[in-house]
Length: 211
Image 1 (cartoon, rainbow, N blue to C red):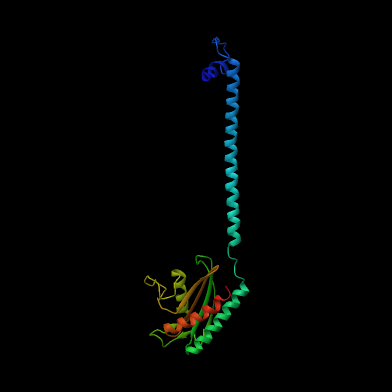
Image 2: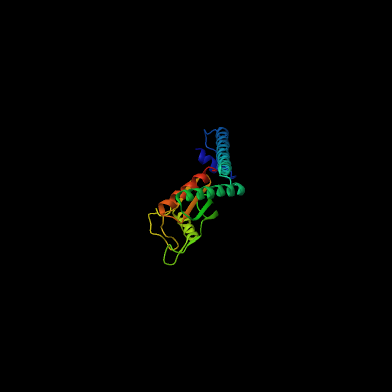
């Protein structure tokens, strides 16, 4: 009845014949109340949607701020240089105990993925060993090859579950450790593999104290 009334009475200005017994004033009021209530409900839905959008935006901003606050701060350059120097001195002492010579390299890569690093090296006795192989060994190159392997595998050199790539030797003697904010990579070349590992571990222990 109300649908008929709205169609024929409100939306059409053409005079219609009234039906006996129908209280048009009550029907009109009831219809108006329904229209008002529908608009109120639509307004509430729109308001809820807007509030939801604002809440989601505020949550996203808060999460971003929290992540930024919890993100590790870059290591101070002077502090990093001091840590590297201490680590290299420790490696020299360990190499002297083991009566070996060679090259020590310590590196720090910031972040969860290694895309750059700061490194420092020290020659411990000699940089090359002409008698170690037919062509001689560039101990600095070998130490950096161990470091490069660890940057790729995130495992101690010579322990990866894959064959060495070109530029790698797959030799032991380097150690890596993930610390808050990045990775410490330490390598030594010049002695036997097990001795190189001991020297590198000594440098790593000294380096990680600063993290």
